[in-house]
Amino acid sequence: MTKHLMYLGGVSSPVGYAKTATAPGVSAYEFDDATGQAVLLGSVPSINPTFVARAGDCAYAVNELSGATEGTVSAFDMAKLSALAVQPSGGMTPAHVSVDRSGKWVFAAHYAGAAPREALDASVSVFPILADGSVGPRVSEVRHSGSGPNRDRQERPHAHCARATPDNRFVLVADLGIDRVMIHAFDAATGQLTPHGEGVLPAGFGPRHFDFHATQPLVVVSGELANEAAVLGLDTANGTLTLLGTASTLPPDFTGNSACSEIHWGPDERFFYVANRFHDSISMFSVLSDGTPKLLEVVASGGATPRHFAFDPSGQWLLVANQDSDRLSVFSVSSAPLKHRHDIAVGTPTCIAF
Image (cartoon, rainbow, N blue to C red; front, side):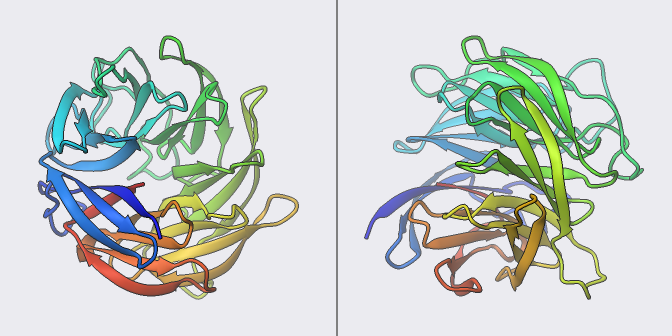
């Protein structure tokens, strides 16, 4: 039995896509991998910390400020349950935050819902992590350009996820608006990003999030608009991506509205999982020898609008942030299909960080 720290972000102030706004800010929980239960340790007030990344006792969040022309990036000392710093993010509607492989830099990706502007329009911004764990002013940013075939959702770039490659030489950015995973060279000494290349997804795919395989040169991507998953080959030496295959995340007889959200490789890296909002389900895939994803099963997510999910460090549990049900639904991973065991009441959860 081991107990793990878990940080949780959520919606604390009304936004159009959430039915409630009851998150207290950024919260710390103690998760017991013997029982799958969690105990609240405390929370730090914050406005809409909708995505959270963890680095030791510190949490880093992007704050989506409704109606504002710029969001913020926040740092928290979760051991002391105190806020450390808030920095302007450099763009509108920050949607994702991550920490580089050295633990020295924070990346913020901006969905940027409004029309392009000369300023405050970064697709991705980079911030240094200071000695006390706080974040300093941004040191670098890049702006994407282009559009896609969906006039309502792809009228301009909409970066939705930014993460460093396993070797920390590049930062990949899933941009829903232009059907690309953009590739930027990353200087881990200075934090500078330099445009390098792109991985092209099918028109209208709408890439949202992605995840790296731990040992194979593979990246899986969730397509929010197409409700599909894609597998890409990653050449880290040259910084290139190659599309290997796509597949629907939904049952073949489903004809209603749905939109992919989170995607992760499972604990043993043999399968990957995708959350489907509005269909309210979790899909499980294998990857065939040619790189094509194969849908294996689809199970109910345990609530409404699974915005995010995460595996606990033991690999025994899958926790789903069912945003519009105000709860985490806890599944055991050892059984096939996934088995819904119980729920944990929380306020409007949108991100889980172990």
